[in-house]
Length: 185
Image (cartoon, rainbow, N blue to C red; front, top):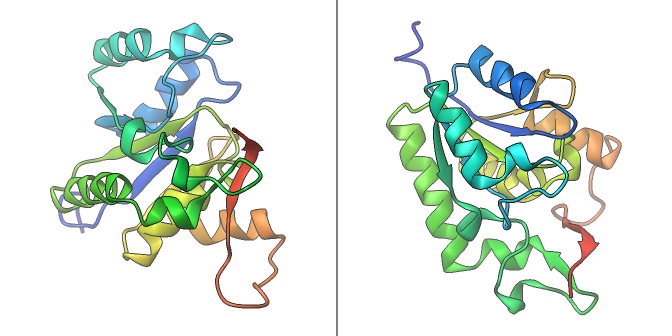
């Protein structure tokens, strides 16, 4: 089966400790055509080459299109209803917002159009990022294949990443409830 006939996964990647050159090399290995930035704030003080404008320009030089979707799929939404009493993002609340659903539907259209896309955030380890705990969980439930490129440039399934996150333990009551690691409010 050639690549045009198979169902392409949505890839995810965090730049983490990679240089911009290493990052682009990994994207090329996986034939990524569109990099979708899912950071709520698409800027980096520590790695300015990964800030929105600089990243867009560098990707363009390599024939990769940059798309910003942190406004719909970001891990730190503007909607205050998405936070618990401790100021942490409650991903179950995020999943119910119209804004988030719009973003997920756009991703599904990309899959239907056989576009090779990667979702990008800053966190190198996918199990520590909303790419797996929020977006990956949603896509998996919608039967959209997802492949996380981990901090070692290895492709990992959503199930493998969640196993890394939970230590392989099945939830005791119902589904996993994931939250952000950080307090924002």
